[in-house]
Every structure is written in C-alpha cells, then in structure tokens.
Length: 163
Length: 175
Image (cartoon, rainbow over all chains, first blue to last red; front, top):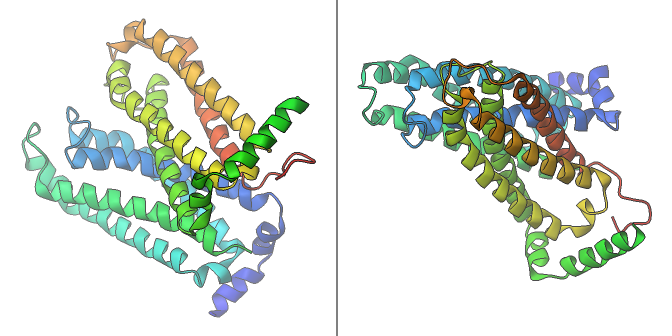
C-alpha cells in the first residue's frame, strides 16, 4: 500500500465521511445526479456526431450549447467522486472496477482531446447537410461506448466494496 | 392502512416466490446489470429534462423554438421512463422486501407521478403559447416557474431512489 493512500485514509476528512451515517449517501446522491447529467448531455452530442439524432442541428452549435452543461456537471461529479474516494482510499485502490473506471475516464478524456483537436476541424470543413465524416461518427461512438462502460464499472464498484 | 400493509406483505411474499425473483436474485451479475441499465435510462430522462427546462428558463438553446426541442426530447424521455419502470420492477422482484416497505420508495413514486403530470400540463400550456413555435417569444412566467420547480423535483426523485438502499423499513415490516 502506498504511504500516500495510508495517509489519506488517516485524514480527519476520510474518517468523517467514513464514520458518518449520512455523509457518504448524501455525497453519492450528488455524484449520481451530476454524472447522469454528464452522460445524458454528452450522449446527445455523441448521437449527433454519429448522425443518428438532432440531424437538423449543426454539430458546432450543439457542442456550444451542451458542453458547458457537461463540463459543469463533470466538475461536480469529479469533486463528489473524490470525496467518496477519500472515505475509503485503501479499499478503492485495491478494487478492479475502480481502477478500470479511472482508466476508462482517461480514455474518455483522450477521446475528447482528439475531438477538440482533430474532429471539430474535420466537421468545420465538411458540408453541413451531409452525413457526418467517418472520424466524427467514430468519435461519437467511442464516447458513447466509453461512458456506458464508465457507468457500468461505477455501479460494479458499489457491489465489490461492500463492508 | 393496516390492510394496505398486509396486502403489500402478501404481494411481496408472492413476488419473492416467482421465477422472475429467482432469476434476478440467482446470479451475481443480474442486479448490477439491471441497475446500470436503470442509471443509463435516468441519463436519458435527465438529458431531456435538463435541456427542455433550461430552454424554458432561457438559459440554453435560445435560438430554438421550445416545440422543436420538445419534439426531439419528450419521446426518448418517455421511452426511458418505461425502461426505468421495467428495471425498477426487476429490482423489486429480486428483493421484494427492500423497497416496498420503505416510505422513501413511495415518496419517490408519488413524486414521479406528480412530475410526469406537471410536465404534461406544462407542455400543454406551452404548446398553446407563441413560444412553442417562435424562438423569439418568451414562455409565460408560470411555465418558467414550473420548469424550475420540476428540475428540483427530478433531483429529489433521484435522491429518494438512491436512499432506498440506505433507509430503514417500516417497524414490524419484513424488510
């Protein structure tokens, strides 16, 4: 076990959340509400990128309207998630689904980086009414698949860290 | 009230003996899978609710008429609520004593019915207003208030749902 993790588990914040009857569930509620907002708003963009929904809307417009909601909700979900992690860092760092979820989040972030660096330029030069370019459809499909997997891994953490 | 509870106890006991209950409770992967589908369906409802209500409040999508957004997001949300009822039923079947004897479950179901009825009324009122087809027209203040209130109600529904797992059952009930 890393000394950092042991130190974190020994902090007053960690024991406060761990030993309270209601803090963990309350933070968990915030985490759930925030991340369903992340997944919901980002999947609207993903389905548009895949050419499956919102086809009358230019992709750039949809991204401008919805990504601020996604990012705000993500910041809340990440802060709440961090507090949940702090309550039981030893358990979580030994949990396959927690580590898997973190790896999937890194992949989702990388996918979003590629979207902003490469895909948005490809979309900007493509005709607005044509089906989205292949790279846009692949980006949307990858994002949707990653977020579904992140939700599944997140739910499995709860079942494998009981007690 | 007492007969209501004993009917509920008989229903829970019957449900617990069905093959559906045995299937959900029998394999370790079923409950987390059902819960994952439940959460993904919540995401669909929340996307529709957040986008539509923030539009009514004038926060996002101000270039889009409300009617256009309603046409895109209402049906997927309704379909997702169908998925939620189905996956919710599966969770209850797997563990009938868990939800049915906790007040927070019935609060959640009542709020869901209220939210759906209020949304239907809001959509009907908005359809009759100029804001339905004209992005420049402001929606009536009443519906802005309703949209803000509904965002809170949906959040409370999600909190109540998560709290089913933490709440105490009624005294003397099987849970």
